[in-house]
Image 1 (cartoon, rainbow, N blue to C red):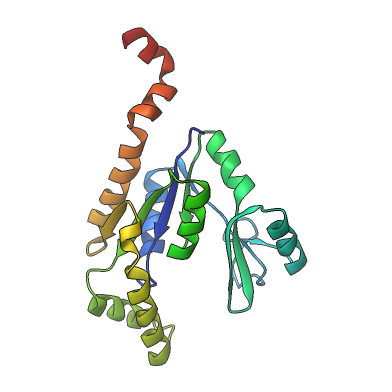
Image 2 (cartoon, rainbow, N blue to C red):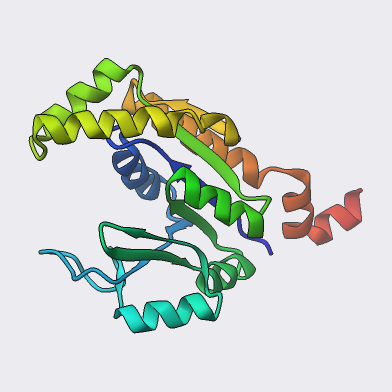
Amino acid sequence: MFGHLYILTAPSGAGKTTLVRHLLENDPAIQVSVSHTTRPPRSGEREGIEYCFIELDEFQEKIRRNDFLEWAEVHGNYYGTSRSGIEAALRAGQDVLLEIDWQGAQQVRKVFPAAIGVFILPPSLEVLAQRLRERATDNAQTIARRLAAARDEMRHADEFDYVIINDDLPRALQDLLAIVRAARLRYSVQSRRHSVLFATML
């Protein structure tokens, strides 16, 4: 396979969604994997863009066929990452980004041990709490629950290859772009992509 698989994980409020949006604007050679879900679309969500929306029986059939790299049930709805879709993109030389939690990352690495894991950390728990409050979408109880979950998630940062501390968005974006560029410059990658040049010169 010629493409790279990147796993991006972060606690809620660490800025992962914003970072990914800027990454895609700066590097169109990366595509974000679109997860399957059994929950109904929310207002403004589009089929095949935010999610692939499927019925529960179809989701369960995909589980039986082992077509998910990882899947989970969250609040009564199911979410999963298509194994066949990822494999096809990587074979075609496409770089793919997965936005999943640490548990999903563990499942993916069983199938793709060479996947490049990146964990996004906030600069502090105080800043994380402030970001969650500024969203103005959750009450105090929900924010407290998210902070407790964030502490648990961040204990798994050592399972990832790289850690980016998102205290300054432009700098964090440059760090993420540097990881992507470095992966593409590995000898194993360059020797495949430029096989004629390498055969001639080396």
